[in-house]
Length: 232
Image (cartoon, rainbow, N blue to C red):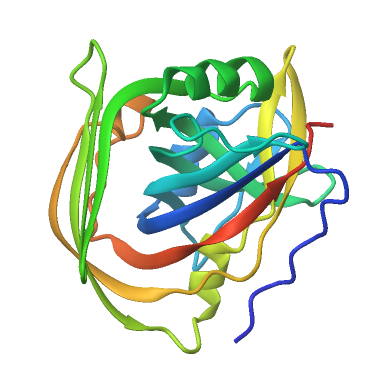
C-alpha cells in the first residue's frame, strides 16, 4: 500500500532532515485524548482508537531558507509526544503535546517562531548497526524518555496503520489563542520493523496523559528530508 502523497511546500521557511527515527505508538481511548486538544481540532482514530506517539530522532541540516546550516546548531536530538487530529476543514495532521530538544536556541526558536511546546533537555541518539539508543532528560525536572530499540527488516509494503501514523503533512499549534497550521513536505518514510528492548519514561504523564495500558507498536526509519511552510 502506498502512502498518501505529500503536498508541495512552494515557499519553505525551514529545511531539515529527520533521521534515525523511531515511532513508538500506543492506543488510547479517544475520550481520554480529546480533552487535551484545543477547540477546532478533533481526534483522528484508527480501528476505533486514538494513537499517541513517542518519537525520538536526530535533526540534521536544520536551517532557515536562504541560509546555510550551522555546524553545531543544525544537528541535535529531538523527542516529541504527539497525537493525530483533523481541523474543521478536514486537514489531517499532528498535535504536539511536547517537544524536547538538545539545543537551547532551537527550543527558544521553536517556542517563539513556531509556538510549539519545546523543552530544553540533555539528549543523545546512538546508532550501532541494528541497535538504536535514545536518551532524554529534561533539564531541572525528572521528566525523561530513555529507549533502546532493535531495528529489523525493511517493510516493503507498509500497511494502512503504518501510513496513518507516519504520513502526516500538517502541524497544528495555537498562535495568539487561534488555531494555526503549517504544511510539511517530505517523501514517503522508508520504514523498518522494530522492537523495544528498554523503555524508561515519564514524558507521557508529564503531558497529562495516563500511562499506556497496552504494548506499543514500533516503526523505525533512517529518515527523510523535510521542507516546512509558515503558519497560516
